[in-house]
View 1 (cartoon, rainbow over the protein chains, first blue to last red):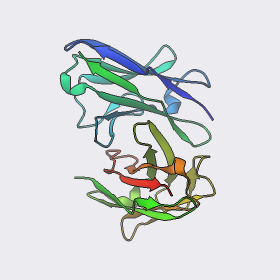
View 2 (cartoon, each protein chain N blue to C red; view 1 turned 90 degrees about the horizontal axis):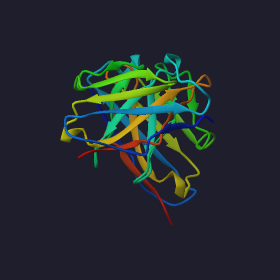
View 3 (tube, one colour; view 1 turned 30 degrees about the vertical axis):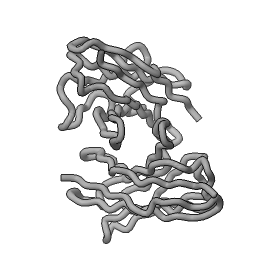
Length: 110
Length: 115
């Protein structure tokens, strides 16, 4: 089974910009993997932030954007806010039909 | 507003069984593929299973294949996960997730497998 990799932790200053990445053990991540991004705050269920690489859900602030970058899926947060401090998970869909989550990135806004 | 409400979690002994339910509202349940995702306390997310919109196609993670069965009753807007031969490592919060539309998540139900 493929392994999806994310940075374990990242720190961003309030108002700053940070990019989280999502790589695959099988090689280059493409739009065919339909990358998803999820946000989870402590004690809460996850919420879907980005679907199919670049599409932001209606609840998600415009400061979040999804893309493909350097062979990986990427989630960029521009103008970080204290309320963006959370765990972020990516998910990739593989040709065997099985979705695989990354290990998650703990984002600190400090 | 989309709502997904899981139920059926609890404490069960190793080797035991549980059936989880997830009732959806605020959307056309029968039009959406549905998933179960789990999260062990303090750990990351793990995809467990999905079922297509009419229930005719299912898929499972290797770790649960042969032990868990996903199903749905579109007349009741309800998704199920029958879990048999439970192991300690199945201890987790179990979330149901709608695919498409809002890709909404339920609030989760906790399954604890322990003697």
